[in-house]
Length: 119
Image (tube, rainbow, N blue to C red; front, side, top):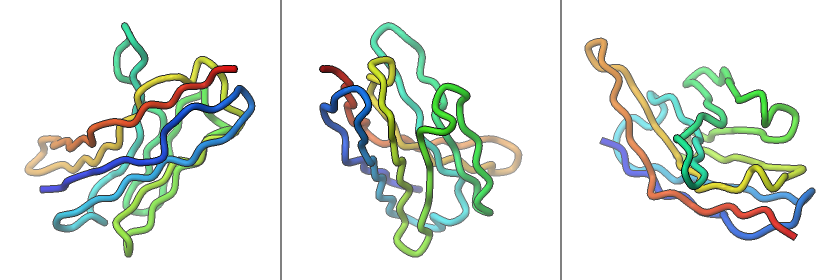
């Protein structure tokens, strides 16, 4: 069982930066693939970036070169550094932890944090 709490969202102008942080509690945090997803109004929840236990990163084409995901297993945190933000990055951002148990994927989600990019 993992509990996730996001922080760091807010309002920022186009071209600006924000850093999201997700603090996890519970057992075996380092065993989970961690990630950030986002959901804009009327849209499905989409992957932004994930990082495996070994540090392998996968990110959406729309954020490559602008967003960076990182994790600190000692602190049970995963961060998303977002630079060169665009209005289309506006969404609720969710922290995710997932793990496969006996071949079945188990997901845990945070409550979400709003990111608004607007002038």
